Length: 346
Image 1 (tube, rainbow, N blue to C red):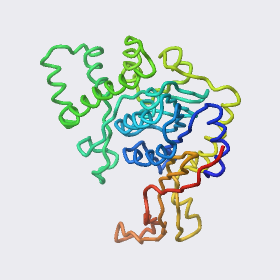
Image 2 (tube, rainbow, N blue to C red; image 1 turned 180 degrees about the horizontal axis):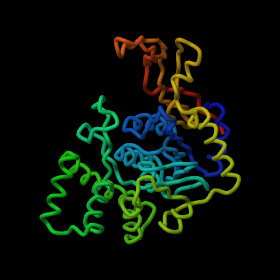
Image 3 (tube, rainbow, N blue to C red; image 1 turned 180 degrees about the vertical axis):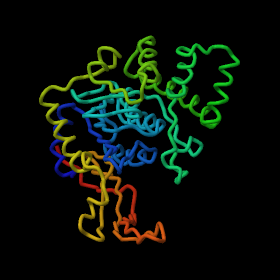
């Protein structure tokens, strides 16, 4: 909990000579959260308390989320400081990488990873998941690089380069993926390249180096799952990466371990396990955090009641009914809560 991290936060602020913001989107299996535009109002609460500073450090852990929310968060924080850095204890992937490249520097632990920023589109027009035909709301996200890879395979490997055959390929693709989705994918790719270029200009000044980094993050990495560790980020991409000394590393790791324990990131959410031998149980799951010493905590919480029941299902008249266990999740609250604390004295 927050109280257990106060001294750790103070140590980070002293070590970095800055004011600290903490943003964690949880990736606990079954209770994942992502970067979302709604966070901006909560960050304003913290930044208003912090006030104008020379330097702000963002302690960031995320698998990604909304691209424009990431862009807006960087610009919001920069309204309150001259020097902005991101501390990555473990993962800052996808939209998290977009935030990181918008900083003056990125402090990465030895296990920290960045990742490609090529966008995936998830909309009601995306193809339906064939593994869940009974649920039309479950759609398959369409990746920019998947579409690009499809055409590169046709042209480079299959040697299909004439206009007639390429036109047929496009028509067949549009029968599988809605044309509006294909258009949005192209627009998203163009947009994220533009945003990345603007953000990188705060960290890198050489135009050629910026273009190289954007090309790799948006395309040349080959896969959205590609992981970029500290050495590659610094030596090959040329990002402004700082390695924490042993003392700072131990503080960063202790801080993240405490948060990881609170959000149960290593413990998949399983209603059967939560219920155990009980027929009904109330639950409260903390899923995402925004924290600072000056304000306290905003926490995204899911709360409700799990109820176990037995249902009889008659599949064939000549056989007895099958007893099936059903778990009903009566979600009573899902959203952000404020846990405000008095300003801690250094």
